[in-house]
Length: 221
Ligand SMILES: C[S@@+](CC[C@H](N)C(=O)[O-])C[C@H]1O[C@@H](n2cnc3c(N)ncnc32)[C@H](O)[C@@H]1O
Image (cartoon, rainbow, N blue to C red; front, side, top):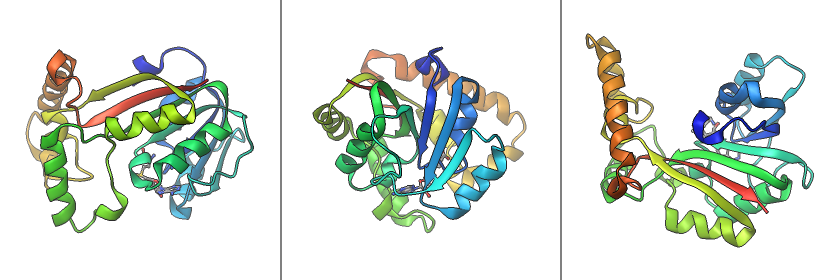
């Protein structure tokens, strides 16, 4: 993720569906000032307790109707928020509206272009009591990119990552059973090897679009 985003400063950043501000945490060194927007008051409270700088502001708001004026944000980031929003056209139009021309929209989201992940997710969403299929719809390339381009974004990056290793070892928010893996001796090493395996797989030409997650970057023209 850090490699893809590169060294370019991020300027004034808006993290939409910020939760506890995970993206701001990751990019903190490159951020001048930031606005986090989330619908959940509890998440915002957790974010505020983590970022005490006056340059980091957290406000309640809906991602499809942002409490932000036009053309002012340098970088919009979404980690795991897009797939919770039903009306993607409205979401992306709203992001486009608040961004300054030339600014970047960066995201990391679950993607279901590979049919195996699509099927597994369909089963998990059905059987898992803590997931709501109504509010979880992973991205599809054929649905996402045309909307972004129609609105006026230019795609820079669409790169999938995470394969079997991610599915089995790093998905503890979805697959509850794998929280027990931390008791397995050598689990760190196993996870590291599996992460390297995943990276290798998703770098192969025929597996390039088969990852579980997608990192995307689009620029407002
Ligand atoms: C899976 S969490 C991701 C949180 C964080 N970005 C992360 O990386 O862990 C999804 C977040 O989106 C928020 N959310 C869902 N729908 C929203 C909406 N329409 N507008 C704003 N926030 C929303 C939820 O409250 C939650 O904090």
